[in-house]
Image 1: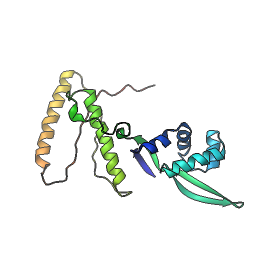
Image 2: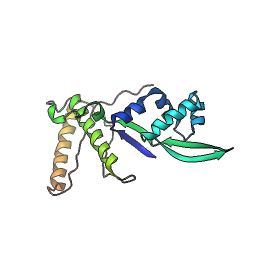
Image 3: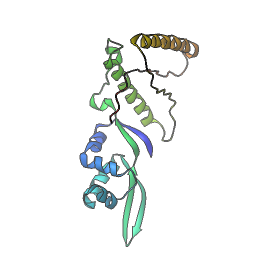
Length: 191
């Protein structure tokens, strides 16, 4: 099972977002058959089986095993990915172009950059051989600034350090990697 799958096909997204199928996918946190899933969501085996066939046809669930008992075969399936993310390119064929956003310090620019990242990395992972690691680097941390001046000084120092690192390691004949660094106020945690 994949940890995360980016859905970039409109038909797959449509199947995944059907309310009954959402509840079936939620119920498949653990593998199950049409019978066990029906009991978990309060539906009939026949209705769940119909939806499981559609989910499987679109690659959202996969068979785990077939159990035979009393002359009946029971198929057990699981989610094909623990988490699903919809690619922004599904809603709009061209993801918001960060270069089209004039204000580099705006939320719109940050969202455009990250939407592009989800679309690009999702496509790379989707095109790669299963179980192949895609060479990525992610740094995720929280930093508390005591003032806007501290934040501005940090940004200037980070830009300077980053420029030095890029100059040291960049080679025109190397494989290009996109580097993005984002900062935004962390949302308040709900209680």
